[in-house]
Amino acid sequence: MTSVGAKIIIAASGAARKLGKLLDSIGAKMEVVKYTERLVPSTRFVAVDDVMPVISESVSFIAPTANVIGNVRIGQNSSIWYGATVRSEVSKVVIGKNSSIGDRALVHDAKNEGNYPTFIGHNVTIGPGAIIHASTIEDNTVVGASSQILQGCIVHSKSIVAPGSILTGGTSVSSGELWAGSPAKMIRPLTVEEIACICGYADDKSDLAGIHAVECEKSFEQVVSEDEIYEDKLERNSEYWHPDSTDKEDTFVPDFRGRIYNSILSHP
Image (cartoon, rainbow, N blue to C red):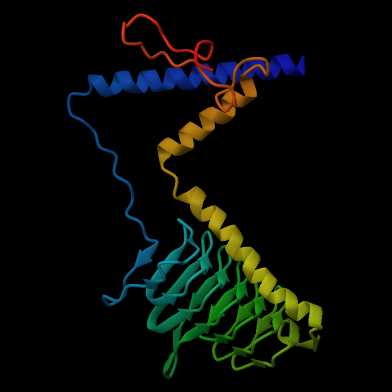
């Protein structure tokens, strides 16, 4: 009964979709004054004081819902994930190569008795929801999810800030250390294996970013076509011919007499 019910639901949803497209087409033909739907302008890249972000041509991925604002530079193979904001209004934000800014993270500079830039090096992984405020994050480091790195902090290379930690202003994390807590303190030195894994995290993020970039660049027509192919594979009987089959199809090409057709029977 479950299988039959599922088939009925699939068939009904397909019919409803086709009916909706038909009604939309009829409505468009009946319009006296054509209506053009206008999309909200993209806020993915925004200038501040006429300064636009500079993005490497070989950047891995900038999510459609990310915001990159002002004097920001992003290096090759780096990625800015969904809902993240990288913003510079008073100084600059520089992100190196093969680094990632996680979902909903915030990276920005500051102005407080002087301009304080933010520097993020190479192979840096910033976790989801983290805040990097006018600080320096050196190469080969990990900043955990929801951590806060406040103004004037320096996180030296080959170190890890645990998820949920808060580095108070001016804190310096030495190379090869694990920090955690609120306020964060040094917990212990990192092991050789943990240090080796840091670059692995960055590479994994870069590979994943490439997959998301391909999917997000697809046109509406491509998405609809892939959806139809997927549904066809679910509904088509396994004994029927499938479009991705390796079997040859008949090719109906008339011969010189215009009445005999080539087929896989006569021309295998």
